[in-house]
Amino acid sequence: MLAISIILLILVLVPGVARDIGGAKRWLRFGGFGFQPSEFAKMCFVLYMAHSISLRQEKIKSFTQGMLPDLLVTGVIFLLIYKEPNLSTATLIMGTYLTMYFLGNGSVKNLAWLSAGAVGMVFALIFRAGYRMRRLLAFINPWENAQGSGYHIIQSLVAIGSGGLFGFGLGQSRQKFFILPERHTDFIFAIICEELGLIGGIFVLLLFLVLIWRGLYIATRAPDMFGFLLASGLTAVIGLQVMVNIGVVLSLIPTTGVTLPFISYGGSSLVFLAMGVGVLLNISKYTSTKSMYEEHKPSLFSVQFKAPGHGIRKAK
Image 1 (tube, rainbow, N blue to C red):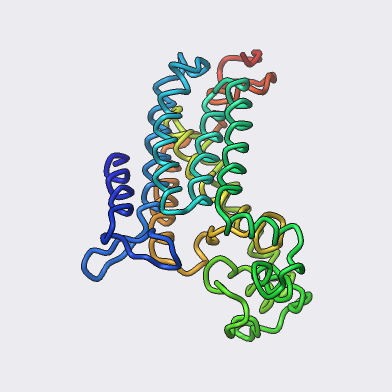
Image 2 (cartoon, rainbow, N blue to C red):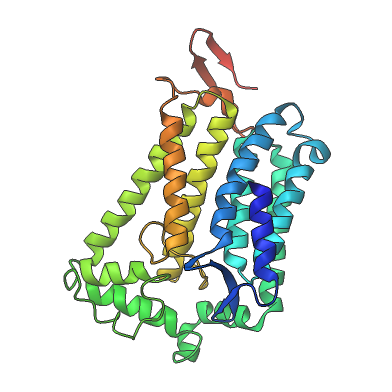
């Protein structure tokens, strides 16, 4: 499946094949059906990494045998998505790999070096593109160009602030009437806060926290390392996407093109995220009643625990 997703990502870059929307070529259309290959690639990537990391457990701490093969695959996916251009989704792919490598008993030293390198690379890519630099400067001081690059952030904060504690009421948003750009996709959470207030916004966040908690709960009770990593990876995809989207809306990070899972407009995202939740539910059918975390612990920790039927032992 990963090979299919790579082929689709390559097709996006072929002139005349992909749909150009807003200067980005991210959509393919087959007849009357269009979708984003990058959304499909995220699910295939998690499935592949769960399988690969679970098979490399004896060599996982080795850079050349444990990390490098998967890192090369991650780099290919990252590059293809970045060329659309779609740096935000490419960065989410990298973040998902780092999370899965860590949870798969990876070397903390390798993880630290890779994380530092990834952060440096992302900043270098930001500095290379003028529009990304404008977004970064708008994040630092949106009022310097309030009618230009800072407009999204300012109007998002206006929508959230005007909603107050209880909001204007469902469907009563003012900002959605051609004032706040991308109100139905990237900035839908600002509209939620405007209509339902702080209480409604917190409620939505709590729903996501419950979903993430249940995903991790399923992961820690998976029957084997593959199930653990698959459930963890799918949960990471959802969790990281929520964090980035909410961070943008609240002006905690620069503006990106990441949507809010299950809420933002977009059929591709909704379909593949729903498939991911379906996989989580399938894994939950085979979970044990007691936590399997001791079998899948990250190598950063060294704790004592009681394994079922094995008494107290020290984590290696």
